[in-house]
Structures are given as C-alpha cells and as structure tokens.
Image (cartoon, rainbow, N blue to C red; front, side):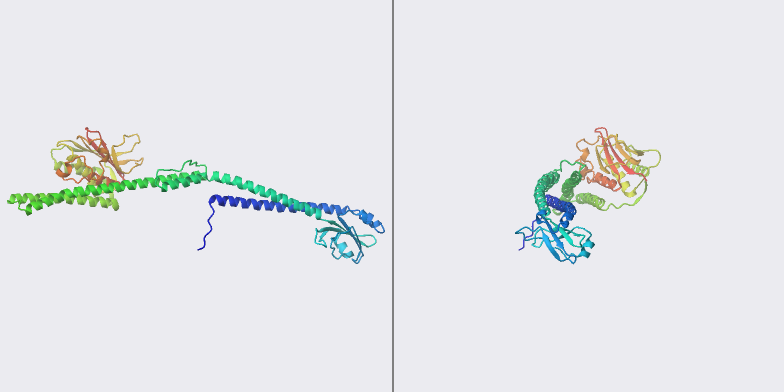
Length: 481
C-alpha cells in the first residue's frame, strides 16, 4: 500500500514559502550583482586596453617581450591576417588568446572595439583589441580575464555563504514570528477541541476586532453562543416535551380510570336500580367528555405549533370584548362583568375565530378562579410600549415589542390573584395552581397555553400582571390593522 506524504501544516507552509521567496530573492540579487560587477570589470579591462602603449611597441623594429606585462599577449599580423609573431608568452604557459581571422577589413569593421575570445588551453577568456598600424600591419593586444573570473568566483562564494546565513536567520525569525502570529489560531484550535470534548461554555479568548484572527475569534464566539443557546433550547424543549407527555398521560389516565371503574362496577351489577344505572352512565359520559375536551385541546396545540394557518382579517377588539362580556353575563347573571372602551374602536389584523377564543379563555378563567360575585373588567385601547413600564410577571409570544401603537385588551379581576411562586409558570402546558380545577370545573390545564400559542401565531403577546392578593390582569397586545 502506497503511503501518501504527510501534508505540511499551515506553519510549515508559511515558513517554507518565506524561505523559497527569500532564496529566490537572494539568487536574483546574486545574479544581478555578478552581472553588474562583471560589466564594471570588463569596462575597466577595456580602458586598460585602450591605454596600452601600442605606438611605442609599434615604433620598435622588433618589440622586446620584456616590455609586456605578464597578463598581456601581443600578436602582430600581416594585412592578410597571417600571424607574424607573438609576444608575452612565458615559458611553460600553454594558453593564449584564440584569435579569429583578422585581416585589414575585419579590423576596420571592428573600429578598435574590444571583443572577447576563448583561451586555447581552455582557461580564462581574453579581452582583445585589434589596431591597424601605419605600415598596414595589424596588432592585436589581449588581456587575460583570469582576475575578473577570480573576483566573480570569490563574490559568488561570499554571496553563497552570506545567503545561507541569511536564510538560516530568516527561517529562525520566521518560525518565531509565525508561531506568535498563529498563537490565536492555536487557541481557537484548543477551544474547538475542548468544545468537542463537551465543554460547551468555552469561548475563544482575546477576540481583538482589529486583527483577522480576532475577528475570526469573535465570529466563532457568536456562532458558539448561538449553537450553545440552540442546544440548551433543544434540551429545554425536550424536557418540556417529556413533561408534556407525562402530564398528558396523567391527565388522560384520570378519566380513563374513572370510566374503567364505573364500567367494571356496572358489569359486576353494582347498579341495580334505574337511578343507579343512570348515575353510572352519566359519570361515564362526563369523564368521556372531559377526555374529549383534553384531546381536542391537544390537537389544537399541535396544529398551532406546526401549521400556524390563520384566516387574517380586520378584527375589532371592542366587538370581541363586548361579545365575551355578554356571554359571561348570560353564564353568571349575578357577576359584575363590564367592558371599558378606549377612544373608539381598536382594529387589529388577525383570525377572528381564534382571537375570540383568546378572549373567551381569559374571561372564563377569571370566572372560574375567582369567588362568586367578584368583578371582572375588560379594557380595550391603543397603547405605545414604553421601556420604562413595569415588566410583567410572566409573558408569552413576541419577545421584543415594536415602538409603535399596539392594540391592547386587558382582562382584570378583583380575585385573590395568582401566588408569586406559580405566576411565572402560568403559560406552561398542564400547569395548574388550582388542584381542583381539572376535576371539578372541567378544565384541561391547556387554556392559557392555547391562548399564548394563538397570540404567538399572530405576532402578538400576552402578559400577566398580578399582585396577590389584589387581583390579576392579563394583557393581550396585537399589531394594529
């Protein structure tokens, strides 16, 4: 099996890229410096060739070789380019300039411009200048470029040594700088590992918004906060679901147990007279009715949680309040139930049937949970939310209210109020602060939960304002039409 090469880390890639760029830069600098120095040295050699005393050598009938410096070679040629003689070759020396064909025409064409020729023995090249003498002979003076090659070779050695030292220092400094620069990413990595290990409350430290890693850390902190909130909300939702199922099972078990008990009593002959039979069947029917109400409420909540389908129309809250007061008076004629209108009608956008159910639930609760004769008052008005207003004891639906007029319907009673320890949970499903409500009044424990779900579907809110034992106020807030 072929082993794939291990990929470089980000730190390794950054350092490698920096070293490669540095090496390329040093190589380009070395090449440019060599070219410039070589050009400068060749220019100097050309100047030496131009100042060579050819006129003195040419004036002699046969020049003396001792007059030539050791790095020079002098070649005298006939007009047709044939070599007459050479000067400057020391005993034991094999090399020399390998001249091209030089006749008078070629020399005149070059016009005393120096040119480079190779060495006959493969050594350093020669810089040559060819001059036509008055007697039409040709003199070619060559100067060895060995000193130029030595200087350039030493320069390359120095640049290689210095470049190696520079690359070593750059690698060391880059390692330290990259490690320091990537330290925030390392902290992010450790934080991610801790979160993966179960520490959901860990956050990335030092989120400086002036740096890229700081902005990344801040964005990750926001994301982690939302994920943690979502996970906590999911846990709370699952806990509420488990509690809801347990409560629903408990609430359904009570009428089922009663129905089973009455049916078994009837089967065993416990009802001998028609009156006893009628009593048993009446109890069975009542418990079945209670169970049907509970199932209907559960189905309604399920539809509100998932469908949120509303028949939106223009609804007058004052009309709904007046109808609820009329129904309450018909139900309990001796109960003082009244409605206080605001400045005219208050129109909101909503589903009239479901909003009527909201008002009916609130008024029914006020009638059930207060002593007979306790006054119930409904108020309809427009209201602009104020941040300085007293916060409610409990609320459900829209969390943040717009700074715009809203339609408000309040249901206030003068009853004993809701105990402070029970008030925050009043909108929870199956929550009951009146143990006798479910068994004696026919309630399912879901009325306020249904009310809250309906208002949430309308982008509205319901608030509880209570100060036990001085009455209870439920406030409904809805967007105006």
